[in-house]
Amino acid sequence: MQTGNSTGVLESLDGNICRCTGHNSIIRAAQKVSDKFTSGDKIITQSDLAEMKIIPEYFLTIHDRLQNLSQSGEGINSDSKSYGYFVGGGTDLFVQRPDEMMNSEIKLLYNDKDLFGIDIKDGYCVIGSNATVTDLRECEILKKYFPEFDGFMNLFGSTPIRNNATVGGNLNNASPIGDMTIFFLSLNSVVTLTDGISERDVFLKDYYLSYKKTDRLKNEYMKCLKFKLPDGNYFYNFEKVSKRTYLDIASVNSSVFLKTENNFITEIYLSAGGVSAIPLFLSKTCEILTGAELSPDNIKEAVLTAQKEISPISDARGSEDYKRLLLTRLIYAHFLVLFPEIFKTEDTYERL
Ligand SMILES: Cc1cc2nc3c(=O)[nH]c(=O)nc-3n(C[C@H](O)[C@H](O)[C@H](O)COP(=O)(O)OP(=O)(O)OC[C@H]3O[C@@H](n4cnc5c(N)ncnc54)[C@H](O)[C@@H]3O)c2cc1C
Image (cartoon, rainbow, N blue to C red):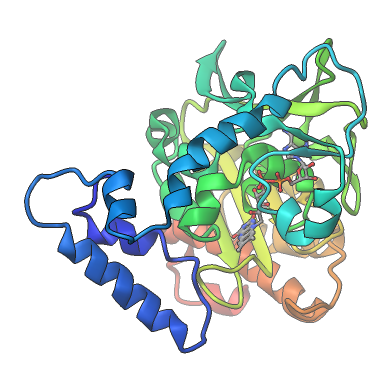
């Protein structure tokens, strides 16, 4: 472990949002320990930290203990047995059902090397289901094709969560508000499912059947997700509204990918979360906009169509009316961010 980077140390605590009196003292303590080692180039090892009683001694054995645990994650392949749970990073499962998980038959996917990696294959970007949010943010392919992606995913959880939360977990948790799910829906992505023997592909927009129910069979797991690498005149945007800007899941989120030619939309994929029982691909809204001129009136018509496609419910994240309003605003936000020039006439806002 290399200390000497107090920002990194503090970032690793950014999920600690406890408002009790201990919160600031934890941060101060971390800062103090970090400052103590920032002078000079000496690399401080875990053993040094244990010797100085900064971390407990059992920390030194954790790597080996995790490796032993990982044995149960190997050899998924020809095994068609149905498991209670496939486990990715566990940030959903172990938070939502800790007791059940302790006594369930689980399959740890996190150690399966075949499920890692982000590559380009036959014009597609292929993302292994074990890729974490952090992996995606650091990936050169995504940086090249979607430079703003890093900023979008800064709104996802906290550093410790982003380091563990996998694409497979986000898509298969099937939450209607999963941030990665909503982003990849707007890239018209395809998921590859396998039972260890055969594989099949399903468009992500057809993957969600009803609340928390996907097209995946019990003995299948998600191997990877893929989408066509964009070319030509393409644009994309992701918007998320939550009660807190950071460290919170969305009330409503939405993502768009589109291509244009001479101010006309030639191709568009628009998704919305938090407004239906499933992560929603707004197919009718996309139909209205395909071939349409980029104009405030056409966008208004699309917004009205979107309202007919959604069926939000009132819950802790907001009332039905509020979520309807949010989606309207988020769709306008996409176009305001991407094409501010089309909104520049004085009466535009009154017409919307
Ligand atoms: C504090 C906190 C903050 C969070 N913030 C956000 C946020 O801002 N945005 C957001 O979208 N989510 C957020 N989450 C939710 C969670 O982190 C994500 O949904 C994450 O992507 C889940 O991934 P995982 O690998 O941890 O999933 P797991 O918990 O391992 O699994 C989730 C589900 O997916 C299934 N699964 C996992 N991998 C596969 C696979 N390869 N094939 C088939 N099924 C699989 C599991 O069986 C389980 O049903 C947050 C969670 C916490 C605890």
